[in-house]
Image (tube, rainbow, N blue to C red):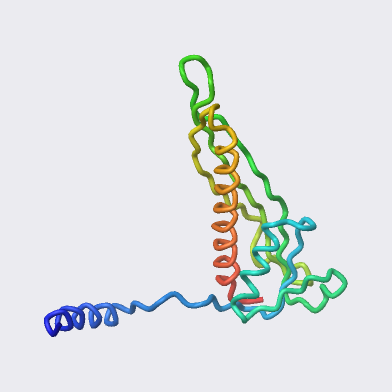
Length: 165
């Protein structure tokens, strides 16, 4: 037991000396945000949940109260694509690539752009088999959900990178 403790302490000291620290909730330059996107967009809803979970940002959901927001996140487009990547010798699809492409910008109420229109692209490959079509549809839906979560995390980090309003 003492030997294990003797091995753990040097590693802990080295990690603390290099500036290592656990990931913390992002710090935002704003307190209130309005997310301007398609009605009932799963991406907008997940973004709102992630921002509210930090306990540092109030997400204004009512468009009538948009004036109380410091910034507005405009979700310009959310596009899901499915592209054939590989065919077998008889011309049947063997592999698809699913993509989620999101365009957004961040602006103040006065219209000053804090983040210019930008795009986040996530893509995943999926093997396809006609005999397992139903299972592959479910797998595709799970991949889109995973990509959506990744896009939201990237959006949160980009919003946290804004320092001046």
